[in-house]
Length: 342
Ligand SMILES: [Zn+2]
Image (cartoon, rainbow, N blue to C red; front, top):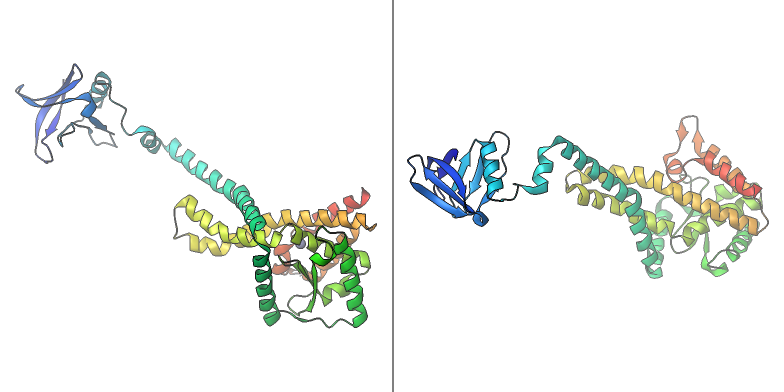
């Protein structure tokens, strides 16, 4: 017999009562021994005892029996072969260790998704992007840049001809072949010495970069590097990565309110550093292979990278645009020098 209170069906009215189990039935009786209610084990439901609240047995008809005698309720539960209340989720919620584990698991999952899931999906999306979309995106990008940051090249005809010849020479060694890439010559005070690739195969080279290069091999190295970005659709991947991260965080945390804040910060940090490091290394490695195939030294690209860093970085640090897209120059140069020794 367990002492407790019996609550009438769907009522807050209760009486002092005792509960006992007999042949698979729960019997609830008043203190004078008169029967208040009876229910088979299968219609009973035991609510978890939370904090200092009493344990509660629902009889299935809207009535319930509750008791502060937890040990008694537990032996009743065993006798009637009832399931432990709450299940796994409840037990996890009750233990701080469980909470900590859940937080760590969520963090690990988030990290895993951002570090591996996002790049993987971005690559799949980039591979599945039709060329027509890559062309449209590239045209739009160039329209924006030509309207703001870039102006037509002012290179002399003989320099243009030299750059075009080098471009043809390198692209002939590339997977898309000589017709698969387009050279766009531009200049721009805000852009400085720079080169970048667009998804449709366009490679933009600025006059300042051309002027900075000391020999053909340095230019060839930069061109091969940019063509590698085209070959692997790195630009498309970065666009997909950047747009996926806020959505990924919302999915994982279920919290949309923080997303708008993170959306402005996180892509900048994650996409620009961790992701682009892999892309740059891949482009450097590909460029090294192309340079070797042409009988040139991969270390030449490293020489130009060092000079580029000098131009973009002063005593006060590097221009953000440069640091963001080209991390760890020293490590890259070292790698290119090792490629030369092979
Ligand atoms: Zn690059």
